[in-house]
Image (cartoon, rainbow, N blue to C red; front, side, top):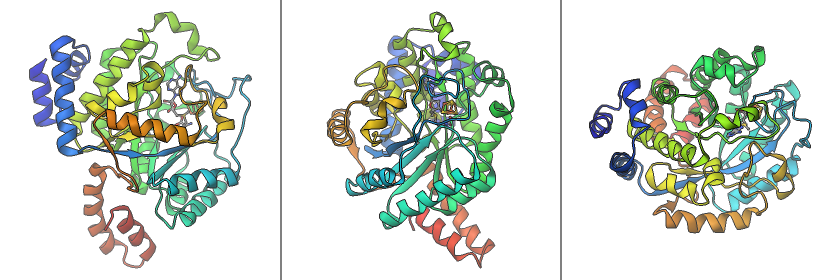
Amino acid sequence: MRSIVDQLIHSGIASKQDIALLLQCKGDDRAYLLEKSKEIKEKYIGKKVYFRGLIEYSNICAKNCYYCGIRRDNKKVERYTISDEEVLEAARFAYEKNYGSIVLQAGEISSPQYVHHITALLKQIKTLSHGKLGITLSLGEQSEETYREWFEAGAHRYLLRIEASNKDLYHKIHPNDHLHDFEVRKNALLTLKKVGYQVGTGVMIGLPYQTFDDLASDLLFMKELDIDMCGMGPYIEHAETPLYELRNSLMPLEERYDLTLKMIAILRIMMKDVNIASTTALQAIDPIGREKAITIGANIIMPNITPQKYRDKYFLYENKPCSDEDAEDCIKCLEMRIKFAGGEIGYGEWGDSKHFSGFGLFLLSKQIHARPTDGNANRCWAIRCKI
Ligand code: SAM
Ligand code: SF4
């Protein structure tokens, strides 16, 4: 096992079979993997942990993913969309508390009114923060035109989990229709890159039907796609979803949790300078789950700043944490937890993916020559690349 870790450290790559073996390591081998990942994080990323204030903007969704508590056909969910005033208030809170960035996340809607509404909100968030708040979007699959409109309005990072990079598995956890097409989702990731976003993807870990080979392929998929950011977490069942009936076939929650830590560790070693989120689902399993992930390799945390009254309506899975705390409580407890994990918060910083920044600088030099008349685009790039 150690030789696989060492190979990954030196070349950043290993075979699917070797990665699958590594995902099953135990005892001293597991300790070695986590220790090396920790060392690499310290060397390439440092101690800083960056905040993304998470605004769960709407639980209205046109899609029907078999695992998700807010899927279209769950009639028990009371649907909401946060008012503009409340979104701006949450963004102002993040700005005043020096979070550096926010994430706007929601179910998937693609109507022209919705798209333009988000554009207007993005511009207002940029204005109220004097351009200082970084904005990540997680609003699902959209057209290239939409991605471009939102990018030009000020969003610069986008999270779109592939959920499962094995097409067969993908189709087992989604309905088989045009709204849930693996190729469309994969192409959306390529489109996001083309438009210029820092692109993040990820998967759920411990899904029904999922094998170690699948998870190894997921990591190789991320490497091949050359992602800038990753958000992956344990799959947690929800009673009002079709996959719930397979709950007895799942590995125990603690194992899903441990497997997530190993996935993070291996990704950190394979892709040394990407941003890796320590996701909320980790905390749903272990009260200090996110802190452990920070210690061994993750560097992003998303404190929930959704107005309190909406929190219990965005239940993607059971035991979702922090639903009864307000944003102030959340930040105090997080500060303590990150310190405990040996990290320090990068207040007021965007904390962009170093993986992207290097590439962005390279592109910037090309873009200035390629698009001499597009002053705005160049200015955007300069800001994004922190020049
Ligand atoms: N609708 C957008 C999309 O699907 O890309 C963004 C919001 S969606 C709620 C965000 C993520 O929640 C999904 O990418 C999925 O991985 C995760 N999720 C949904 N149901 C889950 C579950 N039961 N357990 C763990 N994660 C879940
Ligand atoms: Fe909708 Fe996203 Fe949930 Fe799928 S995962 S049902 S797209 S909110």
